[in-house]
Length: 318
Image (cartoon, rainbow, N blue to C red):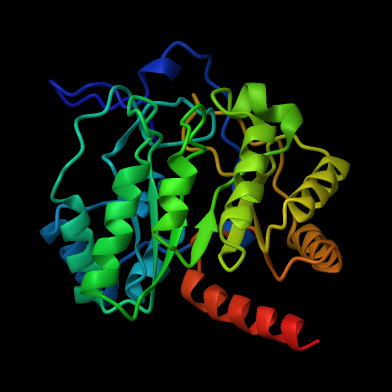
């Protein structure tokens, strides 16, 4: 069983803000979301490159269930600006606390790793950095430009924080011209106070809308988890909100509880229900939808980007 606190002597607890919360039961996972342990040679090779460049990945920090499959295919989502987040979302396994100063060599190291991995498409995400005046927007920009310089054929997807109360931050990021701008809503608005207390639903929605206004050519993307206690009608309304904001791509995946101190899983959504969500979302006009129990924001991102381009081309020709 995973525990909420690292107990190695001398280390700060991983989730100090959750230490005093009551334990909640962790439901037994159904067969359809069990995955194999990562043991392949491809996984080991990717891990070696990540460690050589002193990089942090969301694959490891968020305990993603798809890490074995993705790393075997040399797909890794780089997490920039450290491994410590200033937020304390109830669902998230990333460490919470006061982050260290930004690493000035990180943009260069990320660009070098992307080139060495010979990636066709890369996803760059980050922790929330509310401690920084721009929320880390300039650092995102530097990472994008470094990748462009060292791996010019690689397309770039960024998964950003909400930049809440950080005027001009979004403009800085979009000016660097990522190919995909992703910001996850995570859940329906009625659950924000419990699940994502540091964020604001309508601010996140406006962020996605504003990104498209700043650059109509950029693909916009957002994702949610289900199984947190949401109602089906709430998910359908969220889809309508995203379409009103011009979002192109929606991902829906099953929430998995990291530890007993995190938000409990209300239920495991069945594969048939995920398929129904996908049909409805496509009917509402999204260019692309990925809705499965194991869907995560960057899962199969390279293939999804190719599908997005094809879908837009069909839309334009029609």
